[in-house]
Length: 192
Image (cartoon, rainbow, N blue to C red; front, top):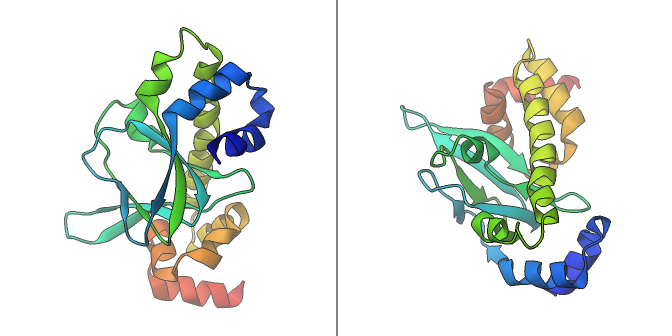
């Protein structure tokens, strides 16, 4: 199953047989149940995941004990990267948790295991960079959403950039992510 998944979903990398064999050794599928913790606050960021099925979100609890949603992840055609690049790049323990919203299947890659292969397979360094690029784009979109002036603008931008979020996640989570009250979200959605 892993070989077929890699050759189908990563065909654009034109991996050699040897590169594919080495990747199979360091990749693993893991299933998570709804609500199950994938990565937790305080852990070192050392795993990159590809969401194959299901949905994942990240959150933290503020000083008042309120849950704050920080990201949503739904699988795209080629999967969705679930990776805490902010804390990884800052080389600090994770400031947020990642949880399965529904039953989910993730493909896990240990970053240190890939780095060991850089000398033999320099192209694997490109994998890390290719994973960073969509995360950077995602972060820039989130910044534009969160910096919008009005709740209506925030909601419209989120709908434009990530329409599936509204189909998968509860409005209370979306309101938390946007930093608006749930009633405001409901009121604005009735006008869109």
